[in-house]
Length: 127
Image (tube, rainbow, N blue to C red; front, side, top):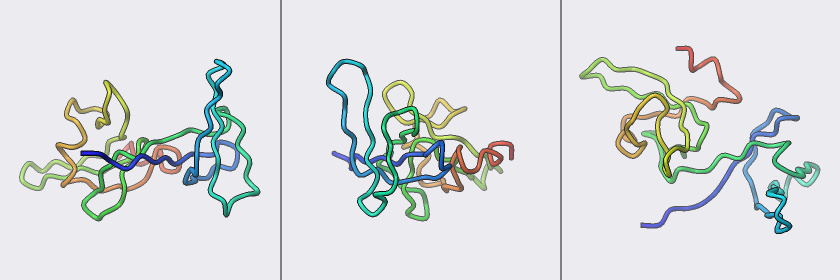
């Protein structure tokens, strides 16, 4: 089964989250890339990875239908076990995982809810 590949980016200077329109890779072997913001944000110019942090869409949605991205903070609840924790979504070992868990994200998707991200809401990890 294929999934939609898309990204968002955290702008370190403007401290804002943006949907990425495209990525242009540098073929000169310098290892860089250029991120292009959406067309309606033409006044924003990103030159390379020094200005932005890319986050990939996991292909999954939370219980409310919100897309889950790398860097999102997701609340996992299980009322039967009285489990209620917030975890960061990360890329590790060739897949998206819930930080602090060995389980893969797909195994917990139905009990999850996106409540923020690590850049705009870092205090939520302390809950």
